[in-house]
Image 1 (cartoon, rainbow, N blue to C red):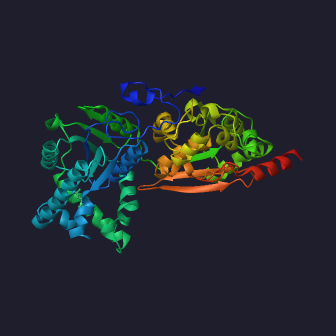
Image 2 (cartoon, rainbow, N blue to C red):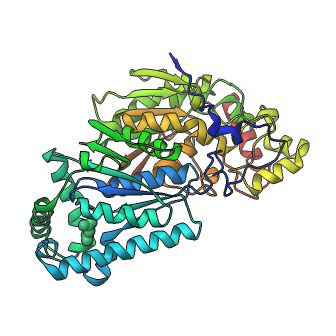
Length: 472
Ligand code: SIN
């Protein structure tokens, strides 16, 4: 089965669709964010709404990471952090609305966060700010609405409503006992105080309802189960909502592997559709055992490969359902397909230097850039967010982009990351970061890694030796 996931071709992608002369970079500027989104003057404040322990900070962190991956400037303004500068370790009573001093300090923290957010927008630092706080009353939301309106900032309210006791408990234990509010405290005492804090919020909490029909909002019920959307007004808002609709926060892992060493790898050639080498074949045969070791006996995964032979051959001994994605094919190296780096340097010296200078934005003549790859991978990321238990067998550049999304790797670094052959990577998203484990198959392979600024001939000797040992 082939799931062809070509990038959307609506007007918003106009900038990406135009013909770009060889070697020309598409750099983000004020009018486009580098993806072609017509972003001039777009300023959106995503206002989180919900009781404590409903995954608001996790959602905010994910949205910021997703937007950064798409080259959209975004930042979280967490009201709790502002409050901590005056009240670092409050007890639950601080959050009782009859505590007037507590109320005064909490309002001051919200005001400071909003003031900084307005300054941040004015400084042209980005298009999306996330106000991460409970914002649990209609009065507070109305105040935010007015403040944003004064400064020409659109609002998108995101309410996380969750009655799933397991999820709440998990959040209380995993996140809040590690919160700076409870540093040095006994985790049991901290968890009890945190429950009391939630009770205080519950006394005054008002869900977004029909009185607020004019607000742009999305209500996430038990993250992933049900979504209610109201008055979405523009493209970027709808894009954020689409991302939120695909989220779930159940515990899960994602496994990533490059294909086994290919015949092209042995020759130092890029692109193509070569078979795997004898050592690549050894990796393919060992992969089921590595997966069992990493995922556990009996765990059923779904395997995604590209449509190229080397990934399909590598995955063929895995006894799981398999899906081929065109979107997982290797970065298209255009006229350089089938050449070695040394040949590229010789035939296209300027292009070779330009790519070294800005690898993320450099687009191969007749081919793609890393930025292009990120755009075509977006449906993959959405599908990954919706799914559980996925193993992806793909190519170096593609794996770098997917890895960069989960590990929040900046653009200037992601194309230069070393991702070795014959290694299984397990990523486990946690509340505020992603945990990584690497399992090496201990099967030698040539290195396809070339560091920025190094010679195009790097690795030639090692490849010659590998070919001799494979042949002998
Ligand atoms: C906090 O002070 O920790 C959060 C304030 C709020 O969101 O209500």
